[in-house]
Length: 351
Ligand code: ZN
Ligand code: ZN
Ligand code: ZN
Image 1 (cartoon, rainbow, N blue to C red):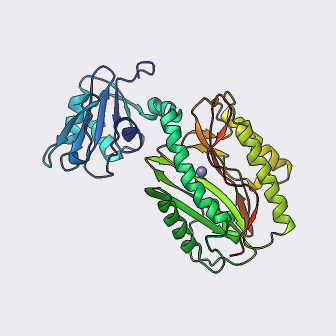
Image 2: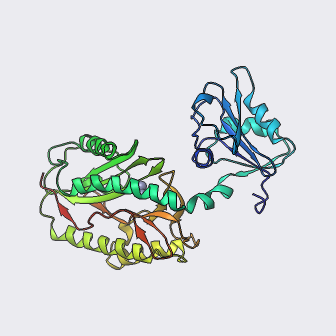
Image 3: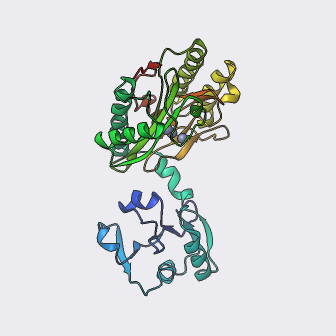
């Protein structure tokens, strides 16, 4: 904060607060906000009725519960005091920020992520272990998918999505964040919302799912085929598989993020599918499903030890099918460590 010229951090909704305090603010009309001055101890301003859920850490922050008739914005403003350069969490509701700006008219404002994002992006050993455990839980579900334990043919995408969610919970996730099932032409929409479409034989099915285990997120994608894949799809899939593997190999410490994207995109473009790869190669992952660093053209930031991110190229043919392979990878001095380890080979699921 000193380096960046920030006098106080103000953290409300989002992952910065639980990252520092272990407490996640409720998305409520009642304000929760950690006031963390650069030159003084931190105070967690919290609605009195939520205070029992806060695990107090007296050495790290003090608690300031506020009652129903108090003005939390005024309490925060008083704690900020004469400090002027304020960084507020990116997910703070506009209603609170506008109130704070009125109460602190001479303050200058920036995003808290200026301070927190580079710190949160580099995971320590404990965080990597948590990401690994979550990935292993998701991998057990992916293994069941590849083995044909999750019936596909004759069921709707939303039924299959619900079963994947149940299995994530059974494998230790306390929360399911998403379970995308895109069958046939729906697979060409990367964030397809699973719906009533019934999965038929001889279709590609893109399954992208993840959840939260001990606070940290999983996220993996496997694409299966409900029958013998035609040559055209096999060829496309082989390009994708090679591109994903090459991008993982390229994710060594010191490499700019955009270069990892460039490796996957280069191979896919060379094979003639460049305009079918319609998203970045990956996103950071941690307490949030999507956070820094992003593997995208224009991000020249170099990978550092502890950076955790997805490598998930895809090829999408509108009206027909799509395919994506996604693993979470951690950059380490010893080389890139993929946390997801289920097979990348094209699996036929005739169930
Ligand atoms: Zn996504
Ligand atoms: Zn995903
Ligand atoms: Zn992802």
